[in-house]
Length: 433
Image (cartoon, rainbow, N blue to C red; front, side, top):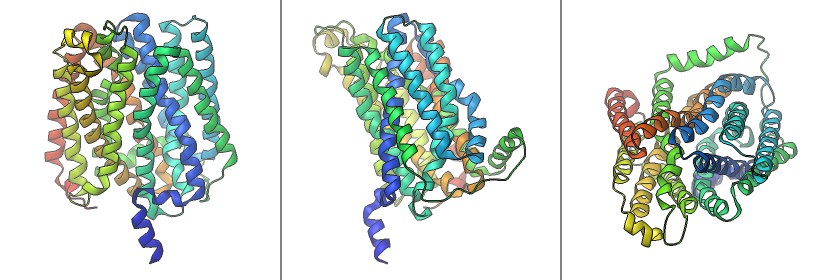
């Protein structure tokens, strides 16, 4: 009884009672921060080199496409071999790739093509890394009663670093250059790899003796999702929203470009960091309030409704950037209308999307069979790849029209799609906490 009361009081941080999970979670801060910095810095570098929204979208898309290509295989591998060993390999591989990119950038040999090649390579590595990362953490917690806490903590880790990493990254780019951020990102993955060498799981992983082919195992995971409506609807709606909606984050360098000519000089890097951090503030807030909201609203209803709300705020963000107050930006960039309004709308987009992501992932983690966890959650982690891959579509429209119109069109389509999903799935809306 005393332990139950203690865990209730700890709330979201209950999973940190496991010592090895604390170490794993702490080490993850380094690698997740590195991932956040990589996304921001690569986009800024490509846009500065090219000035093209299409190439900006392409650089983000190749990372996402590379991850998607490997993701299904990565999920199967995560179910077949020691997840800890796999994470050590992927962490060191990412660190080495970033180190090479940092060196090339530091000696001014960087080109758009080189950034795209390295983005593709790191996307392929992430195709193995993300499935194992999303399925390994249950091995470091003491029991399944801490699963919701572990999911929330993982979400808080990503969202919290979405505040700190972009803000610091923007200023590092402005004053030290993009190569400095690549060096820091390389160190982040190196730390993760070293920590994974040290720690061992609390919960023994059951090794599969399955001798079936990789394709058969992959199809088994897909078949499970296809036959289970909860998994089918949640994963599909997550894919669509990420590809068409949340990929707007990859276009932020083009939105911050209006701050290149201010009375204080070029502030585009700093403003890019602040806008990206605004998304992190919203996402972290959404993660923190999800547990409270689900006490008042059915978890199923909360998940589907928040997905509609997120794209509504995204539409308003695109609309607000149709109106650029250049005089105000030039004279008062730090308190300009565009920065304040954009940040406000990004915060609420991130907040509602985070409620959807945390709620849906919690439902999936609690319902997925252990023997399929790597494959199913590997398929789910394609979500994060689609946030990058979808930037190619948005970038193409932005190149032809504008970034604002591109975001508005995508958001309008998503409002219709997500509203339809909400109205047509009453059995999911009725799922209680």
